[in-house]
Image (cartoon, rainbow, N blue to C red; front, top):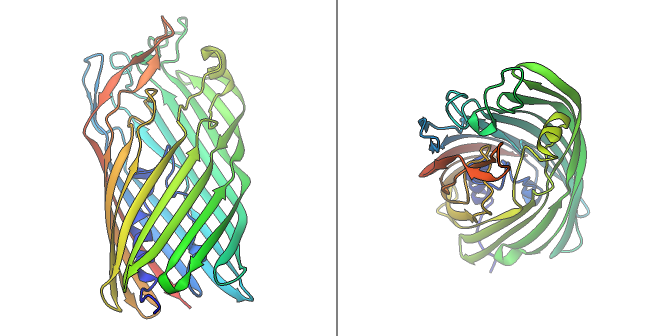
Length: 386
């Protein structure tokens, strides 16, 4: 007997998890999700999310507290998937795969991080095709066009004394990475057993190399300009689901991203630090498991829990967290051709003590303590079947 479970629960899941910047590896925000290719029939979907972080900490210099250094942000995605017959289908997916919004308030002359900030914006357009070899096996592959731009400011006593025109320091250093677009690819395979709603899909996302036109400044004065090469990480996504009873589905997903090669080392900064990177992100994985339930032909819902393990002891002030755990709830209402979905996710962010190198000794030192941090993400989507 075929499991009775509609696609609306998958849409509810997508809405609840779309705003993943509060609970994803490194600077991930969309998980580079291509599961739209597995939707049944022709579907167009538009999703929106907003994330509300609460990242507050205390300066180790006892100069005061940092009140929520994580800024609120939005996340958008859209997709169109179509069947072409003879086992072929394709999807065009737009998303915002990476991002950062960090700002430390405070006096750079008295606090360790006062004025430090990081902003990264991204968009990506992915065209992925799928070929069903038979009812059980399929292959999918495609190309991705990725656009990034960013800016980082290092400010505060952790980077030396306030620049006075004579004393060497990085307190007041800033770099702008102009918008750049580059290409990559995705490739994967899936196994399905439709009668029990079973699907296991593995997708590889290639690293993408960007060459940014770069301007570096110190205390507002340009000190270098040139090109900085930055590689966004290669990653693997494993998506699984299976029916366990009529109208009930278990799903899970695991993502691994190789961030250790994502280095930002502009010329002036590299020369001043002996070749260090402005970023310091560990390779890591995130895992999630959940339960979806179709309550009626019109309404379905889901609940999911997930985790990202703690990394090593190198915590960057540009990401003052270490590990995460979350729970999400979502629901979808189906009106024939239109499905409206919504969800909420609460993320507990791990305690962390961001570090920098002491300019005098060259040793890494804890500069602040962030505890009891969290984030709330709200998402919704509208899907149209045609």
